[in-house]
Length: 151
Image 1: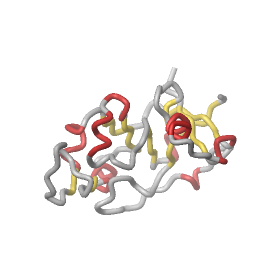
Image 2: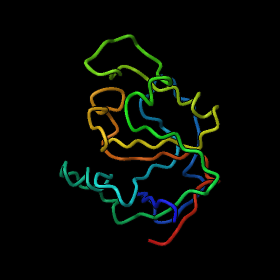
Image 3: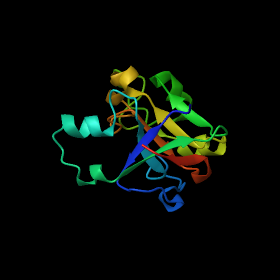
């Protein structure tokens, strides 16, 4: 069975939610469909609850899996993202810097349909380029690989 994800903010999938745009020097793309793995211990809902942040859109959600043809760039550690950094040259105690950007255009050009961050495996990634990625997340920018499923 394919891995299942949950997207908050909409009750049904519509391809209009997914798009790809180039955003140079961005550490988090303003593109694509965002979700968290259903089986993660640290997803979007968990983060909202830990921050006591009231998310009115939690009641609006849908589930999806990815097609077998989906090519997702997986980040399990800082080492995985280093070849895709657009660096500001600011040294930090981590390998990446808050001022660094990710070359999402290059990731897209290499044929990836999205990117998944497993921040719960190494939360120290939050101290660097992933400082605004607060939970295990996936962003998908190819609507053709998204398959809506029942919860």
